[in-house]
Length: 200
Image 1: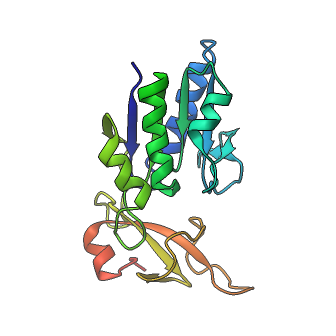
Image 2: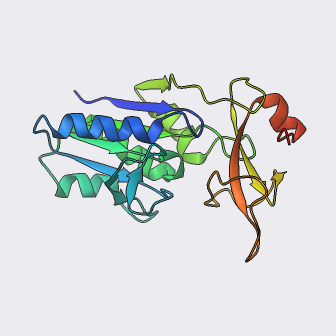
């Protein structure tokens, strides 16, 4: 019997690092599995801010993950990073893989977007996962409190409206703007997220 496990946390909580570790551990035991990601900051790979990475299958909105798993059979596991960006249908496909193929699925993702609202993929994952596991690495706000929100910062100001998916990174505040807006993400506690306070 397979298990659908959803591990979640904020940016900087070690999601991708743990995904890579699980994939490595299982692969070295001669188990065959797939590593998948969506909109990783480094492209078609799972990458950790610690500097480790591995090639991965990019999950486009059109990809049928269940059909992919059938084509790759026999399959022991899937490790799926950035599942907050998967479609609701793709999350259901992961559950179907667990139930029908008895394959373990290890899924990793963010809970909320830059507005503090659930991603569609996350919402569905919370609804269907067999196990929901908050990651133990607690990222911190600039004030030292536990970070609970991923704030989008555009030209050094927090924004609360816009497209749900805008790829950025955690570049330094005040970075020179050469060709348009500088978009980055910052970890904040709820109080400073609501106040729009970056502590600068």
